[in-house]
Image 1 (cartoon, rainbow, N blue to C red):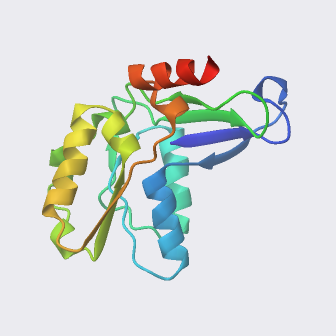
Image 2: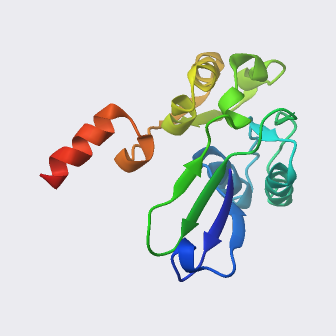
Amino acid sequence: MADPIAVGVPLAEASELRVTHGGAESNTCVGLARLGLQAAWVSRLGSDQAGDRIASDLGREGVDLRWVRRDPERPTGLMLRGTSGAPARYERAGSAASALSASDLDGVPVEDAGAVITSGITAMLGAGPQEAAIALLERARGLRVVDPNLRLGLWGSDRAATSDRARSS
């Protein structure tokens, strides 16, 4: 997802933003590529400027993007944050990644991969992304990694809200 960041001030006070990208799986791919390993990212990006920026950044890092689908109907997800102040705000509902499905794995040589990674965030985006994550893991023959990426404030579930209330009491 696109990640404009207010550096050094809360977002509400920022006059400038630093633009980057985020996401557990894409960040892992960048790290692996920087270590000299082959890394491919399978996801969806909007056919928008944010999607262009992310594809350009990941491609420059050496991440294989041949299985990234560009979605003309849905925008690229967005995370707005500052390095101080309020927590990040996620705009992922209705995003291109929220439309990810098991069919997005068609033609992807998952069985040949030495390792695959998915995160709990992908599964949280909806039924389609959850099915895609499960299909990825079922098809994999190498190492399978699931990063639960459990951050209660991020999930927005009733269980998280209950946990937050219990901690505040």
